[in-house]
Every structure is written in C-alpha cells, then in structure tokens.
Length: 259
Ligand code: PGA
Image (cartoon, rainbow, N blue to C red; front, side):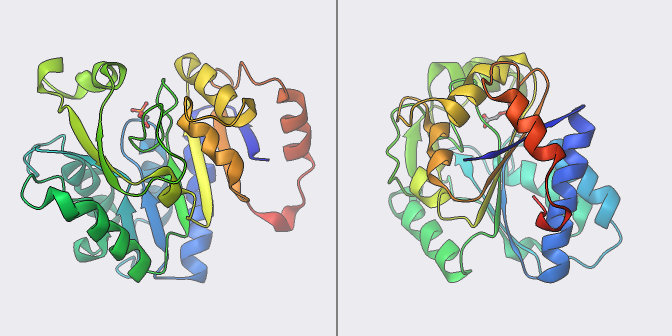
C-alpha cells in the first residue's frame, strides 16, 4: 500500500519531499527526477532551493509529466516555461538535461514515442513528483485513461480546463489538448511521491489511495506501484478511512527507512 504521511502544513510537505530528493541526489548526482507542474509541487521546489540552492546540480536530469498541445512554448504558462521558471532557473539545473514533452503541432504524431525513448535512454525516472487533479487525474491522464498508456495526446476535461483557467486570461485560452506521460509510463518510475493539499483534493486522494483500482479515477493506479509516498495536509487527508493507521505507522517508522 502507499505510505501516507499527514503533515502539519504545506511548507512541512515541501521540506519532507525536498529532503528525500536531496538524499537521492547526494547518492546519485545524475538522478532522474520526474517533475510535475501546477500549484501543488511548488513548495517542494521552494524547499529544494532553500536546501540545495548553492549546490552544483548540473548533472541532475529531469522529465516533466506533461505539456499543453499547440501552446507557444514561450507562453508563460506553457509547462516548458513553468519548469524553466520554477525549477531549472532557481536550482541552476542544466537546461539541456531537463525535458518537457513537445507540444508543438509540428511533429505531434511522434512526440509521445520520442519522449518515451528519451526516458528509456536516461534509464528511467528515479523519483516522480505527482499532484492529483480534483477529478483524480495524474499527469494529464484524465478519467478513463488506460493503466497501460504511454506518453500521448489527450483531450482535457471541462473540469481540468476550468481548474487551470486561473493561469490564463480566460477559460477559452486554456488549450483543449495536452501531451502527457501515460499511467504505464508513470508506474515505471522507481518511487512515486504524490502530494495534495486542501479539502478540494480530499475525495480524489481517498479514492486514489483506498478506492477500487479503476480507470475512472486514474490516480488509483498508484496502488499498483510497490513504492509510493502520499504526502497530504489534514484537509486533503480528511476523507481517508485508515487515517489513524497512517499516523501510527509513520510515527513508528524505522529511522533507516527514508520515505
Ligand atoms: P494543482 O494541479 O497542483 O494545480 O492543484 C494538480 C494536477 O492537476 O495534477
């Protein structure tokens, strides 16, 4: 089962996950990180900056989960721009080592296969950071996505476009299509770390962690993975049935184990 860690607040979640990433990079300077966008992972990147801001991270490699299709890559809300602004620049990563799916219409037919080949050539992702959408999506794998899916073009749901409209001038500016790592791609990362904060994520978290494994809730795919850490605040944990057990397990966790 997933290890569920309930933290006091959002900064505590960021610090916890940043510590784990720092440990990984200390042991393996060319570690491969799976990078997520959206609001949720920002505290992780901020904590990483505080913890490793002065370090030489030029060997670290990274793969973003997804990108909008047809968006100008220089648009401030393209995931290429977001990853550059929130991750690559502050941490002084080497931009040539950080990959984002190519959402440009030119070559979109083979962009998914190209991305899969790049992940394979890097030896796979060591630690994949994940958020979860209110509809249960991970990456942009919307409800109904195959658990065997690989990086491909998907149509965003009306709910996701509404959720992401806050980043754009209007909902009409939110692209209709995206290119996203598949659930099968994500499940091949060696460690999945899912974060979620706030009451609006409580249902999706409960169903992903404890609900039936079903394509209707793509986040439930994490139950198929042998090493998953779910880091949530009290509000996002509020619908979990085994909440007392998660607290008890974490409080008694052997110190040598890490996340
Ligand atoms: P959010 O998005 O972090 O902006 O809430 C999460 C997601 O859609 O995966």
